[in-house]
Length: 175
Image 1 (cartoon, rainbow, N blue to C red):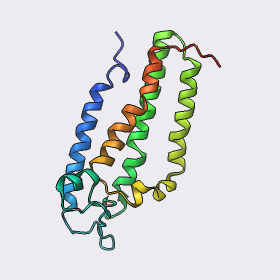
Image 2: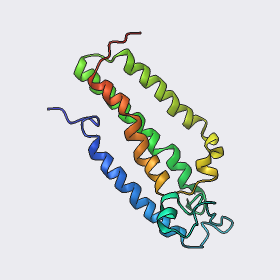
Image 3: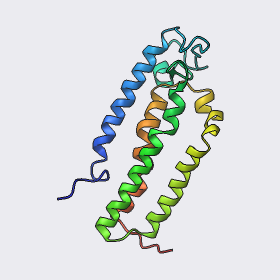
Image 4: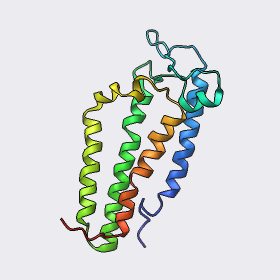
C-alpha cells in the first residue's frame, strides 16, 4: 500500500506542532528574563504589554519584542511569522490536492482555485517580506505563546482545512 499522505495523518503532526509551540514559548519566556544583549549593539527590547508582572499573561503575550540569534542577525519572530507556518500551509494544501487526485481521479476546479488563491497569498507574503516589518505582530506584540502557536500550529493546520475538505468532496461547482 502507498504511504499515508499528510492529509491522512495531519492530526499527528498537529500535536507535535502544538507541543513545539509551547516549548519554544517556554524558551522565549526564560530567555527574556536575561538582560544580556543579543549582540554588542543589539539590546533586548521589551514588548509594551509584555512585562505586566503576571507570569501567565506575560508568557502568553511574550515579554521580548524581537528575540534574535546569531549575534542579532536572525530575527526569530519575523522568521516564524513568514516561513514555517506558511510553508506548512501550502504543503498541506498540495498534499490535499494529491489526495483528491488519488480519490477522485482528477483535481477539481474548486481545488485548483483554492491552490491558486492560497498559493498567491503565501507567495505574496514571501515576496513582499519587508511589509511584515510594519505589522502589529512585529512592531508591537511580544513573541510569546500566542504568536508561537499561531505561526507554528494554527496557520498550517487550520488554514488548510478547506483543502482537506475538498480532498474528499467534490462540490461539482465547475468553472
